[in-house]
Image (cartoon, rainbow, N blue to C red; front, side):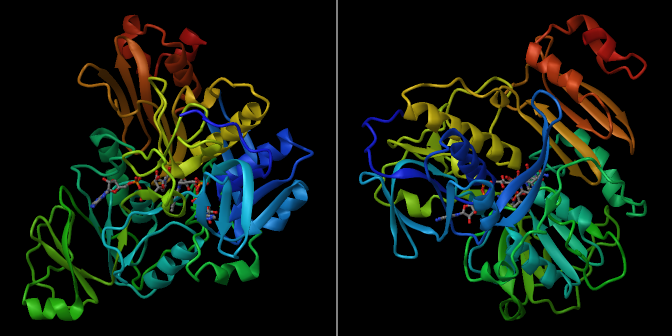
Length: 502
Ligand SMILES: Cc1cc2nc3c(=O)[nH]c(=O)nc-3n(C[C@H](O)[C@H](O)[C@H](O)COP(=O)(O)OP(=O)(O)OC[C@H]3O[C@@H](n4cnc5c(N)ncnc54)[C@H](O)[C@@H]3O)c2cc1C
Ligand SMILES: NC(=O)C1=CN([C@@H]2O[C@H](COP(=O)(O)OP(=O)(O)OC[C@H]3O[C@@H](n4cnc5c(N)ncnc54)[C@H](O)[C@@H]3O)[C@@H](O)[C@H]2O)C=CC1
């Protein structure tokens, strides 16, 4: 996958995308090449900036994210020039990108960081919403203020955050799996969290130390510009903080979970009336298998594969993302991953000469460390953007760099249901087969700790609550120490395991 031809002398260093991956990459290039102009081309009127970056431990990091006008980036880095226009075509053989404003830009090295877009269960249906950027989140909020009942499809990050945050609106949550949060948790952790969800949300929110998301620096005009079909960059940590996610009713949580099923068919109001099918009322408690016919008339109805039909005001499709590769694939023979991303090697290089990719758009195709996997996350977008710039700089002077340390161990810190959640390594024993052991410690409503061991070595962990174990566990996974002798003591709260291992 290395470059086959020497780069042409003409052209600039060009980065496409104003999200975390693109901005981080452009900033690093600006630092590596202070006397060169770096071109950042982005379809969105605002860029994403990482602020207050803090390395919490060897691999865990926390930072705030701000949406800023691109002029702030240009002021910080006078050798970065931002062009607000979408790339409509890439001519890789000519080393050139064409933008919607009619210009073309020659590059000597290019990094594609165009992110991803929601993979909706049904394209083009006005009652099916996806959430990706500030504009789609605001559209969702607007619809919610008029809603009595909504349906959420999907069981990943967005669904988990929404079901906890939405108030005053009935939520029917449809998941393919047995337990909630399949992309982040196993059934045990899901049960721990479900009890919090089912209980009324009465406690005051505790301010958690975690990544913050602000739009303070957003330009006024930018707020209206995005709705004209522009692709904005992805939201991220605490994106819902500034949004009032309240429906029309006065209750807090009202969630019904339909497990192990999918959407079979979506009917618009008139279509449903003609079909003569019957929809169900909202089940009264979470065990309730209500068979009462619903008298209300809804704008949209959803038939599930378990045969049940519910009416609702609208549907949120929180069903993952697809990389934004559209404008780049036409006429260019990229290797593309199964998930639709541009395949990159261990130097973030795509299969085409002088083209790198980072963040949600790419598919990591190197042989990964046994305890790392790609997930389309904010932190990985930053790490990849940073490392891609380093690789581009090294390649420019004919050198090579070692893989960055951040790809040694998967580490993600976030917050679900107001609990701090730390995921390390193969936290769900992904790819370990049946040959692994789990050690658990759980205090209802307080903490859930799970360590994944294989051949006596720690391979991953889930830490929910204020466990204070992340640094010790991170070290245990990285140093692969044989822990067989410790057995269950490893999680015994009366034993300070830091004393053992630090
Ligand atoms: C609601 C939501 C909540 C999330 N919460 C978290 C979280 O808590 N923690 C976490 O780690 N991650 C979270 N994520 C994921 C995280 O936001 C993404 O993984 C990350 O932002 C990806 O960054 P990126 O730079 O690769 O892409 P993006 O942020 O999508 O940026 C892509 C950029 O490319 C531009 N672009 C697209 N097409 C073109 C084109 N043709 N020409 C020019 N420019 C183009 C866009 O305008 C944009 O500026 C969340 C995502 C969503 C949607
Ligand atoms: N706190 C965090 O770390 C958060 C991270 N994110 C990230 O943002 C991105 C987008 O989030 P999500 O859309 O939640 O994606 P996701 O990848 O986290 O989850 C997608 C979910 O949809 C389900 N699904 C897929 N197709 C389906 C179908 N046809 N019918 C029913 N279910 C289906 C999957 O089983 C999975 O549960 C992800 O990369 C995610 O990791 C999002 C929110 C919070």
